[in-house]
Image 1 (cartoon, one colour):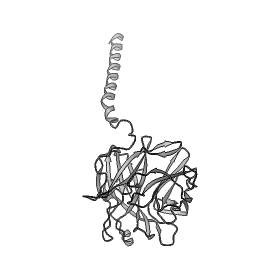
Image 2 (cartoon, rainbow, N blue to C red; image 1 turned 90 degrees about the horizontal axis):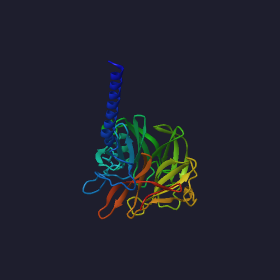
Image 3 (cartoon, rainbow, N blue to C red; image 1 turned 120 degrees about the vertical axis):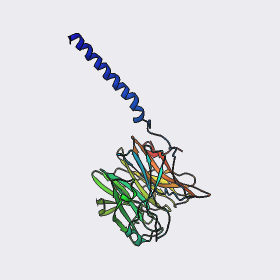
Length: 339
């Protein structure tokens, strides 16, 4: 082969390589970016997004998480209202590929034997975190209006397999006379340590450090007080640009008074104040979501650089409990939702 032939062959090979790269980009990019840019506003959800009639498909107190290995989103929620002899386990649904759905109801997780001593009608208000390949699901065990309550935890590496969840027993218990009620768990990592926020009614929202993922240590910090509120529950904590934001649900569940509020602090343990500077320990709280009919039980996920809040809301006559997911906007450092 002459030098001229060799140069011509090298050039042809280079051109062929460029053509292959361009073809690869053309034919693979649409699939890789089939979802397009991250969605904004309130998402138009499809599939199984909650109801009470004609079939009880529960979505009360939704907790959202992602399995990146399967590009699948999951929502865990309070179980179907049944009986102490056969309580409803934490309910699970999933959406493959997008936050908008279609969402598919998977059913209830097995009810741990130890929870039956509390005579619950169903297990409540889960929260899920992922550490490596393991998913940890925290849940509440109680009956309405009592402090005879507990927070339990189970784990799995395959969240879509309902029978794969292994229970680890109670993490925290409460009883009459305690300042707090051990329900509505929210687990949050800060500076290498894990923390458990929780609480409902009584003296409000508290925070324990986790010794490991199955037990607490030390004394609890008091984050928010029920003062001035008919109730205060369901803590959710987000860290953004130097502030910790504490979202809570306020008002009576299954009523038009139920809504979502927020306060913020420079420190995880507080003090948290609302937009007007009123401490949450003195009944403060800036409204984030207060629709006609009521809404709450919120959770927040950071996805593709945007924050999305999932919550349940109520429709009436007949009662329906639905799920919605909306992007959180930020106004001068405070979270807001579109009307």
